[in-house]
Amino acid sequence: MFSQQDLEQLAQRGVTPEQVEKQLKQIADGFPFLKLEAAASVENGILAPTDEERAAYVARWQDYKGEGHKIVKFVPASGAASRMFKNLFEFLDAPYDVPTTDFEKKFFAERKKFAFKHALGQMCRKNNDDKCACALCEEGNYKAVVANLLNKDGLNYGQLPKGLLLFHMYEDGPRTPMEEHLVEAALYASSNGEANVHFTVSHEHMELFKARVAETADKYAEKFGVKFNISFSEQKPSTDTIAANTDNTPFRNEDGSLLFRPGGHGALIANLGEIDADVVFIKNIDNVVPDRLKADTVEYKQLLAGILVEKQQKAFEYLKVLESGAYNHDKLEEIIRFVQRDLCCRKADIKDLEDAELVIYLQKKLNRPMRVCGVVRNVGEPGGGPFIAYNQDGTTSLQILESSQIDTSNEEYMKMFTEGTHFNPVDLVCALKDYKGNRFNLPEFVDHMTGFISSKSKSGKELKALELPGLWNGAMSDWSTIFVEVPLSTFNPVKTVNDLLRDQHQ
Image (cartoon, rainbow, N blue to C red; front, side):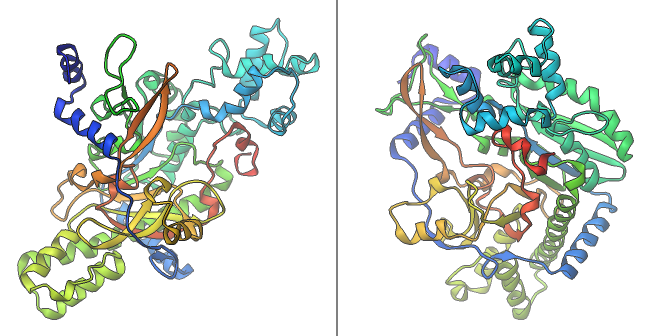
């Protein structure tokens, strides 16, 4: 199947022919849908702490931070902003020259509210005979304003990553999402006067990120009294996946080489696994708010982290008991209750296990990475949701599922999905070390049967793309998972440029 040239290409990417053949088989065969038990809810699988419990968990986190543990904020930041400006790209290509759609009218009517308004005005002057954006609009040259925003000879916002766009305005100047994450790290993820932040970025944007950090980090370090340790990584080429033709044969570029595509955010499990930390916070790059609205985010991040370290401590205690052999039947019953009630992992035939088998089962379920996931009330936002699903070993546990993992022909499952009370805003706090202080090998806990196939095109030709198990669903499928209800005020993503006009971003 592979020529000598192909084999050399594979070697350069760090993948074997066997891996590629396996991927092509997955593309041909597809992936099984997941078997569901129920959508998670406050009545079944989602914690909703009282005010008193919330205060206790926040205090627990504050204590933990003072104990010398290493904490890292992990931010997937490689996403390009091009989709944010889809409507404006369409305006540039439209046969008309004045704002016509509701989106276009809103953008121009409220353009002075954007944090990038001054930068855009300067670029308009530079490229249009010293005419500012207002002057260009007054003479009907609206497309020039958009071109100065999106194009390479302007601000190039159509090609930059979201993390480097100007999102929020402050008295001392505008901030990018990258800077807002630095501020968040100082507010809830710092310990011993240091804040560790790790961004995953694409190769072509690495130097731009480093330059912005060099420009701005000292300002926030001084403002919040912390020392920032900021690191970066790229999605590894070895995690890219082969593209296939519609007949499942390898898709080739015009020069005859094999086409590989990024495997989706699930590829970042490798990056996450290289982070040396006791606790890691994960949140998407565009889910940030100005300082005046950060209080809820800070409180609930600390709540999630407090729950995580408390449950982890309990799991560690039980693992040490099981390892020592100093337990009786009552102690085993107590550990079973913890696994079932606190970690929401159930095994239907657990009563049939002999004590020796039971101990092995409990050790396996306790000695694995742990995550606490914030979930918000469903308000019709797209995205995955919290479910109770069956695992390959026959147990049920809490999982975050995407719509592509659900059999749409199954009416019962579709009812669960459409009537689910909560959805996943990507708000995770993770524990990555075992009870002996060793880092878990995270790829061991991936359910490789939870990828999916998507339809794409290249140079006008259709192709099949293989998406790896997503970072917060299949890639963390075999983790201990706890769901916690958090308020909608902690979820403020920016999907289109006009989302920056919402009150939450002003």
